[in-house]
Each structure stands twice: as C-alpha cells, then as structure tokens.
Length: 332
Ligand SMILES: [Zn+2]
Image (cartoon, helix red, strand yellow):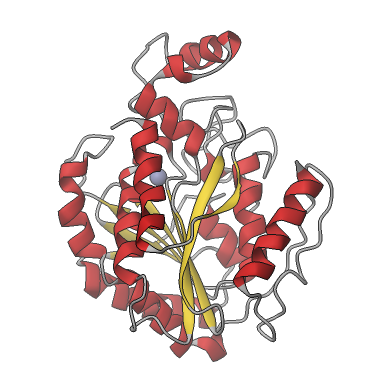
C-alpha cells in the first residue's frame, strides 16, 4: 500500500455520503482527515488512530467502522467523531520511504536516527522524530520507555505539546467535547484504561466501561502503568473523561500489520464504537468534561471554549465548517 492509496481509502467514504473534513494539520502541512457519524446533538465520543506511523492498520479499521455506522439507525442521540490518521507525515515515511520527504537535510537527519538504514517500516515518530503519543502534557517525560533525544520511537519532544499534530488533536478535542475517547494502536490485543491521579470514582467508572469493551473485543483490560504523555492520559488527567487505548493485532504479528489481518481485527472491534457511545450516554451523570486545560497555541492563543457550547448548543455542519475555516486563517 502507498500513502496515497491509504488516503484514497479514507476519501472514498465521500462516495458513500460521508463528509470528510480536517481535524487539523501535520508538521508538513498535510490534512488530518476526520468524519462524523450520527447526530451532532447529544453525547459525542471521539475515536482516533494512526498516531504512530507504522500503525496505519488502525486507520483502515476506522474506515470500516465509519462505513458501517454511516446512516446506521443505531447511532442515535449522539455521534462519533473518527480521526483516521493523526500522523500522516509518519505514515508516508513508512509507506513511501524516506525518498518521499521534500528536503535532503530531513532525509539525512531521519536516516541517521534510523541507524543509517533506508528501511523505515518500523518508524513510529512524526517527521520531527517525536513520538506523538508521548508528547501530551500528562506527566510528560515520566514513562519508563521515554527517551530525551530525537529518535524513530519514544522521543518525548523537547517540551510537552511541541508538535503540531498533538496540538491539532487537542484543539479538536476541546472543540468537540467528547464524553469518551478511544485511541487505536497496534499491537497486542489489549485495552489500557486509567491514569495516575484519577479519583477512585472515575477509576471505577472507567473500569466498568472498559470491562464491557473487553468482553466485546475479547481483549484483556489492563490498568496503565509506567506509560505517560499519551492522548488517552491527557484525556483522563486534563479532561477527567473516560479514555482507552486499544492495541489491535496479535503480538505475534510483525509491524506494520498487513491489511490481510484487517477482517479479523474488524470483527473483534466492530462493536466498540456503539458500545462506547452507549456507555458514554449511560454514564453521562458521572462524566464531566472538565476543561481544566487552556491551550496556549504555538501559533497564537485561540479560545475554543465557545466553539461548541457546553452541551447547550451544538454546531450545525455549516457552522462547524466555518469555525474550522476561521481557525485555519488565524493559525496558518
Ligand atoms: Zn502505537
């Protein structure tokens, strides 16, 4: 599969009537593609994938989920945002190779970090050699595998939320105010929940919802330990909402996981979006989207708190488009 083929798979959803829009931009200016199914009124959840370059199988999984749930009557009294590929620059490096990068200096820099090899199939980072899922402001730098120098994996960045992709995901989350988030990764057939500092009540809530997800997928539910700075961690620590990392694909499979494994992975995960939405609704009185966090954008401070009223008023599609467009003009 080439990078363009991956993007085309996402864009082809438009032929089936799904609206594809941008959740933000990557370091190299690529669009971070997203869609929404269900109603913009009511409870929203957010499912994101492809934050690690070599894990683009998770993007293909979200394409299948969005297709299945589009115009599906079971998605009601709320909706689901899918962000297909948070790290498009990294995915292109894995799929098209280092020669796809525009600058010779960048190619040399990344090749050096890759121990001189031209094989980038195991690459996880973005184009700045930052592991995006360690770059969030949630006990940043406290993970057991963290490294503090640029690397093809596990580099936390020179400061928290230094990366454009991370800021894009944060902005989008603050705009859409999901009551629950799911981050798809590969591999290991496992679901992680919880984060240090959570209240006992919230820990129990997340365990209860996670148990249902675990039953549906057949993946064990495991409490997060020794891992920090991820999107899930940020959602739990800064927003106090339930958030999960789901690692798809057997541990025995090599990275990157091939598309031939998609049918099995989809079968295991197909019920996750609807269960997550149902549970977010069921536990609504225990889920308070606290905006403990005010984002100071690298490109200038932007207020997002009024982009979508605090559940009181949800934007129409047209309004949302114009809001996105306004923030683009402001930022880029
Ligand atoms: Zn991952």
